[in-house]
Image 1 (cartoon, rainbow, N blue to C red):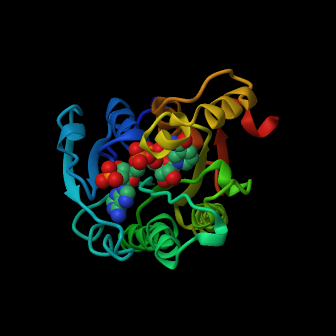
Image 2 (cartoon, helix red, strand yellow):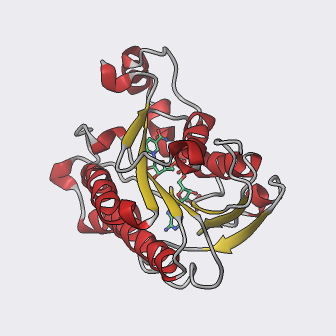
Length: 242
Ligand code: NAP
């Protein structure tokens, strides 16, 4: 058996229409999985480029939106990728920008994982969850208070869920991406001062691409990673080593 293969597995990826989620969906497909491309936007463009895939409409602004998704048929792998960011000085930050981000980036991560785990445990199966955290799971960031709070929460939840479920056949881990070229970072890249300041701190000497995260997600879902539980793995060109 190839310890890096996902053949025979079904993976659900949230936010699969673009960016890191789309790259993860492609990589899961290349590794042999059937991929459920889930998102609030249409994920058909992603699904049509994968050998075995389907689309699912899933708007996680309602954090309970995935509660019925996992009971229909076995889903082995869950990638909690969907996320939003709102930028403003903390002194001006609004309650709406707090709640919107916490709902999608933290509350939905927990309740989607819960729905997934309930289904896996009910069928006495096995599963793997990969949550997409952030460098702001470790650092404070600037002008992104709800994002930082949510991503610190994702790191904590990853460890808690690993503690509860590792012995029950469900592996839970997270990836903390560095600075990756996606919609999420468009504002930063458009600001020449911030862009250069970030670039100067990355030991690898360049921003990351969505594929850099995608292959790590495949690894964490694969048999090769079966003894890895509760890790928040930085994939950041060396940023955290600085
Ligand atoms: P992105 O291109 O903006 O992708 C975000 C994805 O989340 C999109 O598919 C988006 O759908 C989806 N999403 C947003 N709100 C949703 C909702 N209510 N329901 C369902 N899906 C929703 O940015 P990205 O960089 O790929 O972000 C993916 C993840 O990586 C996020 O969790 C982000 O926090 C994390 N991350 C990114 C970086 C980076 O440098 N890019 C660094 C650290 C962590 P729409 O297209 O419809 O908005």
